[in-house]
Length: 213
Image (cartoon, rainbow, N blue to C red; front, top):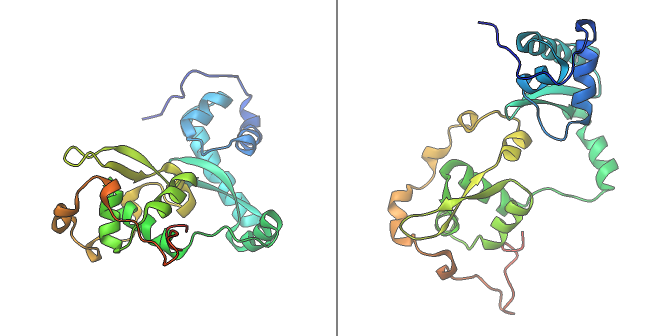
């Protein structure tokens, strides 16, 4: 069954389909699905999806410095992976913007156990994660996902930006690591308001290095 594009924004001649898609994707600040693109260029959705796949293959065959990926439910241009160090050196000018090990471990817990409260993440990791969670929220990797009905604790989940950054389209594509994590049912007694979770401090009374990750 042929998909129909939503209301058309502009009627673009068929011969200009690929250039039109390239022009739109070049200025897009987030992934765009093929239906949205079809509406923008005035072509059937099936033709647009086929053209996107053809463009992606063409860039790969030509060895261009960028590639077109279908990530997080939409299409977007990305720097080719093997050229990432060159771009990183230019953008960051030698600075490192990587997540710390503490942040990566906390992000993994949220990804596999979401929606989950900070208290539960702290219980799984064995350390206070307030500072790390704030870092992940500020970077757009996790977001609030409501309140736990029993403890009134704020729940957190990963964002579409998280999917985009790790290059998958849904959480179902995550590796099968969840069975290796502790069973949260054993942690029910720790389901308390997050402000009651003790803060780890250094001898000088300052937040530990992990909290400021």
